[in-house]
Length: 158
Image (cartoon, rainbow, N blue to C red; front, top):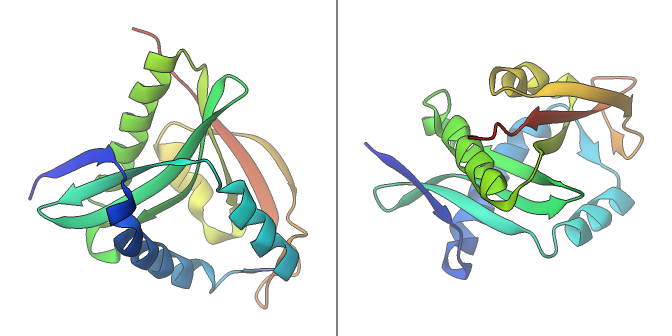
């Protein structure tokens, strides 16, 4: 089935929330945000635009993004478990890169937690780790220390 990428709308909110919940279940096996961090993350999402990946009439992927300091920063990349490893995340990221190119941004950026195993996933999408720091805003029953990784991917100009 063909996957298309489009801007998210208010009508997508319930489907995106369900998708985010599925993604968070996987992450919660590794970490849980501390109470203050959850509140700050919610505030940080204010004003972000959304992209959704749609297959038929079903939302199978999503991310939130905004322009920050000459780059397009995104968060909450989520792909439905049935659609993982089928190019949905890549399609979302490439679409976002095209938006960034049109806006004259120099890079895409994101933060991820190293212990989730997502750093190599983003490296396959062209991102490089720029810096690491202790993720003190998270707690884990599996790891004594969690690592926040800031990653960027240059936007190629045509």
